[in-house]
Image (cartoon, rainbow, N blue to C red; front, side, top):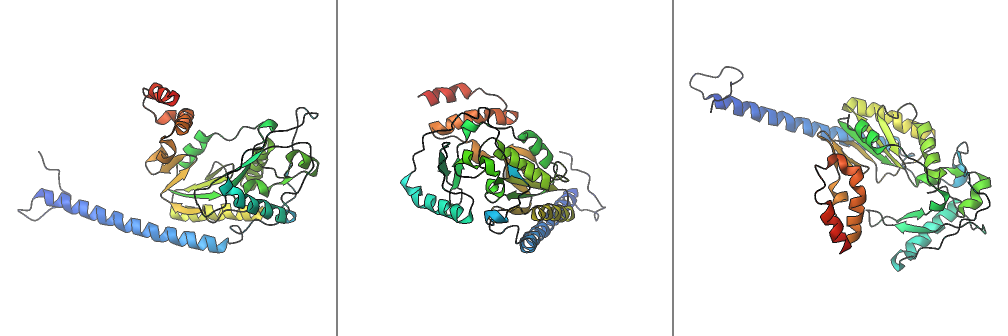
Length: 320
């Protein structure tokens, strides 16, 4: 083995490997110092922005305090058709949470009792945080659906950064008011989950962040990602994003907000300095239902798969 050429001249009789070891040690120390400085800067950014934009991370206001310049509309293909579906069963353990959620929205004026002949079922989805109330979802499938931004484009743009921030809208679809004429179609008077809801919310967010989307931020439904090439740039970008959200009277979830990350999970993927990779926690199936979900995700993950030689075996196990 031929030893590598050392950097600066070494004293006579010194092994050339000593220079290599010294260089490696110095490089490791520099890396550790840079990491420590980055962590300190990240903590400062997190604390200062939460403090400065406390109202953005506050509670969602009452419905009459929301902006009225972006009203959600519903365009029915057949105006004579009634929307009727059977209700989903409610697990007993969620009954108290359900009552709390309904009472909260009734008090805030976001929903109201209705005698409309249209009715869509709803259900609850538990959140990762067991202490948080479940997510209330209304199934508006019969009112059709609308296309959303391309996930591939969002991930490719976000991967350009070195530092990332991620935000989650607080009850995002409750931040857009319904047009009064269309309230009977929703029954619960909330623009959540039907055809125009994602579209209208995307338009609302795109209007607020129009100058920055694709440059250093993207949004997908109620998730926002911000990327930057340096800490100084990250501070500037965060100021621009949070100023815009504040100006348009939108609100973010303080619990889910993350600032100045070296690696971030977004839309089922992990974005970091080494590129984009699937989030392993989203792709490992253990039960039959999870295998079905995994197979349905293969199209999204096909860029990361070397082959599909196990797909047949997975389908066979699923049938068993």
